Every structure is written in structure tokens, then in C-alpha cells.
Amino acid sequence: AVAARDQARAAAFAKKHEIPTALGSYEELAKSKDVDVVYIGVLNPQHYEVSLLMLNAGKHVLCEKPLAMNQKQVQGILAAAKANKRFFMEAVWSRFFPSYQHVRQLIQAGSLGEIKEVVVNFGFPLENVDRLQKRELGGGVVYDLGIYTIQAAQWAFQEAPQKIESSGTTNSEGIDDDVSATLTYSGGRTARLRVSSKEKLDNLAVIKGTKGQVTLVDFWTPNKLIDIDGKEKEWLPPK
Image (cartoon, rainbow, N blue to C red):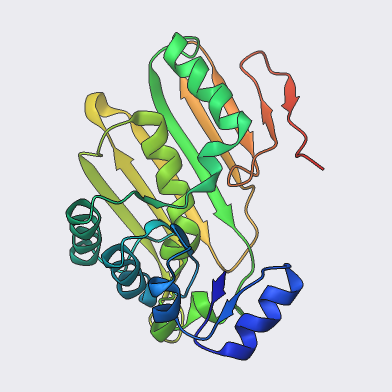
């Protein structure tokens, strides 16, 4: 089943993707007895209310990033998931690519040595995409593209940063559109991140260790990487 705030849009989506049931409200979906798991892909400001609606209705939830608009909302969602004993996860799909699993194996085996630095850039010219540029739509390049760079650093270091420094620019509405950040971890290890909705960047994630490094190409959807031996490795998506 698929649900939207507008029945016509739900019906059009259902027809395109051959989904048997189209509903005109999220409440209807929450009440559906034959739905066990819900994927939430609404606009950022709606993640909180729709996640709570589904969790409190007994559904397991996979919610699109960003999880919510602030820490308080995230805590509320997690509390609802625990109270209802339901599975809840942020939909960071990048981590499920074979290339990420390969890098995780290298890290766990010690092939890269101690991870010392992570460098991640992610940018495209997206000035005309309203969901990035408008405050009422939950805009901001950090909420949209920045999530991917932050998760890559956290995934590599597996701990919270001890210090965060950032700088950037904003658009005419005061919404961040180009941001650089340095995250400092234990032992002086660092992640250097940049995200931009103003220009295309190299869109690489480079994970550097004391014994070598790997580079994830188009790291948010990485079918390809430059391995520790300097050779390109590729996993073709299923047809």
C-alpha cells in the first residue's frame, strides 16, 4: 500500500509502481491491519509526526534521512519505538552496498591499520531544488547532503567526535548552502567534510589508515572503489 495527503497523487504513484492499494491519508495507512512495516519518505519537517503516528499504531518504521529536525524530536521517536517495541531505523542506504561491507572488513581485519583521517566531499548545483533551499520544507545542505558525509565519518570511526568546527555560507533565506566541517575524534584523528548545493564536488569518501587507504567513488551510492592496493574494484547493481 502507498499513502499520501492527496488521494490522486497516491493513486498515480500506485499505478506507476503496480501497488494494489492507494490511500489518501497517513492515518488510513496507520490503521491498515495488513501493513506491518512502513517506509517514510515525506518532507523533512513531517518525519517526526508521521514516525510517531506509525510507531504508535504498531508499525515497524524505516524513515528517510534526516531522522528529524532536532535532537528533541529524535529522542521522542526513539522513545516511541522502545515503548511500542517496534523496529525503527534511519534509511542510510549507503551502508548496505557491497563496497561498504568490503571496507568494513578491511577495517576490522586491520588491513588499513588505525584509521587516522576521513575526507568526504558531496556537492551538486541544486539551487533550484526547493526542499534544499526553503526553510518551511526543512531545507539546508547539511540536512540533505550532509547526512551522508557525517554518517561516513561516524561509520569509519565508530565513536562520537570530541570536537566539531564548521563554517559555511547561506542563501537569501538564511539556509545553509555550502558547509565545511572538521570533526575531531579521540587521539587527534579527524574527519574533514564539505557539502555544497552550489557546485559539483568530487563526491569521494577517502578513508586513510596507518597502513593504507581506500576511496569510495560516488560514496553515497558506491558501486566502485579504489582499493588498498590502488586498483579499482566494482560491484555491478542487479538488473
